[in-house]
Image 1: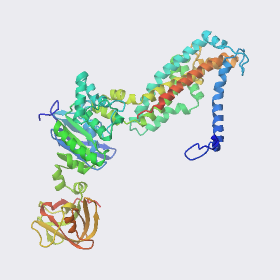
Image 2 (image 1 turned 60 degrees about the horizontal axis):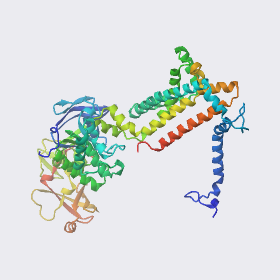
Image 3 (image 1 turned 135 degrees about the vertical axis):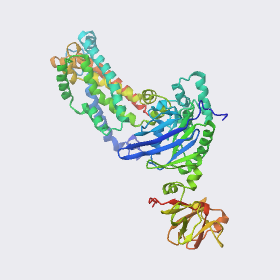
Image 4 (image 1 turned 90 degrees about the vertical axis):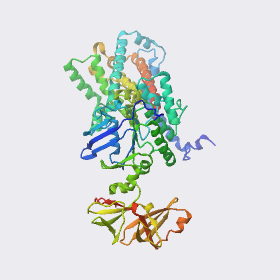
Length: 273
Length: 367
């Protein structure tokens, strides 16, 4: 019996009758991944220009990246901003999710929508708005300003991830802990938090990536000594086609995917069960 | 009590004029209730009656609109839950799944800065009390429903609270285990001697376990009495209907004399004054009468309209002469079954005068 006529599922559909599905799924994956993956060989090119496939191989653009003080400064800014965004967005998002979960507020649903609205509004609008506000407050080109703006974008993710973890959490446990002598804060820290820890780690990683990968807000409000990596890449691309971009992209893809894979791995350990 | 594990004395509870409203709905309507030191008190009522709200007021999770709550001499109405020092057992156990059995039971002790060998010793002691000695290292998901219930109980008593609150703790267990645990919980209460407030909607459970039962409906206290009194002399139609089975037969009362369908009745208590009354007939208290009317027994004549075999008992419906349908329940031993008339046959039903209890008709007879 050939592989094509074997059953692919309980319903006895054969692999043969599903070939079109496999091809379609394969194409979707290729289209999704190809643009990301194509920069990897390009980054190892010897050429002055971006080319694919590279004719000769080298790591000179990686050397150029690591040797450039400007690129290094931008990288430091990006990591710093992403790190602080994670530190700001995660606790705020967790508190919001918890507060909405335990409250009997009639408007809880509206507040939830309000908090996730940065996800719905086009980022460029947010960027323009933030820019004007920051211009008044003299916060343009500051790390603090960028952290706050990125936190606004990251909080919805934290809120959604933590809220869904809380949905399967039995709040009676916290009540029991309190009746047994734990204060409300302690009950939350010792009983609730450990049980939503995977959602917590996942949302922290997502916050980090949200900031690290973000370019539009960064274009508006970062700059000077505090330009982020993504902003510098964008500006560089506009002026010249430099394979350094490809090597930086490769590194960023690597960082982001490994963070996402980590988030995915933690996410699979289901919370609350 | 020599084997009383309690650190301090059990505390009496005084609930005074507690009212709690949600919008326009009274969850608790001016409830006053005293629980004696070391008493096993059950709050019994249908779902939505307010019994759980009252328990939450005792635990401190619900702040009433007004009223007073005292544990012993101490007013606790403003005391947060974690400072009330009450043990609590929830319906769904609410064990901490990220801790093993010993850590669950040791949790309240750690909060009280007990550590080292004393912690281990007291945890094991509590586990032995609930017959789970040696289970400390087990994970929560390795336990059966009954074992989880015991762990939740051990966790609630390990710090020797002077008051123990339980919210339908047995309702998730199957019938046999539940009945077994009822007896066991009662024994445990007698051994530990803490004041216990127990919430249930299961009237049989309440009758089995309690020193006294507080029947609650629509946020009001309907009756507070010992189980026998509640069952034999319900104060109103709600209690008579909610606890046990009963049929209500309208009777006329004049000048302290009670009669039904023109026949005078002997009753357990004489109703004071006029007003409308119903005779409560418990199906199992009715007996078949043949021949001469026995002394102290009221006899009702009717026709059998239905007969159902239900295993340990049979249920018979009979229409009395004025059309009221009454239920009769009896054991199904062979001898007893031989006397059961067939459908359509005439039947004489006897009710001893001590079981002839009148309930004031407050116009809320169940349909």
